[in-house]
Length: 54
Image (tube, helix red, strand yellow):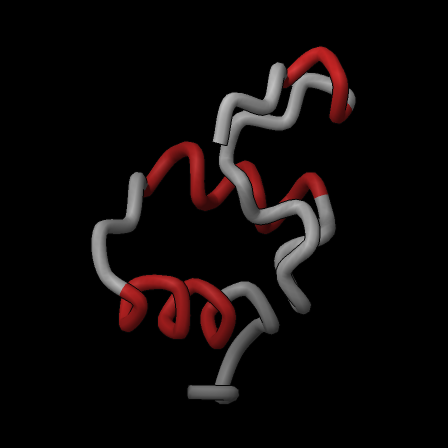
């Protein structure tokens, strides 16, 4: 997309505008886990909400 990370506060995941992925915590999970599938993002969303939410 040719967006410079410096223009969006250093964001490199591309997830800052996605619902549930706007926090540094969830974007940190994305940076660590490096998801490849949409299903991976769904899993991260569920797991980031705590216990017994899946």
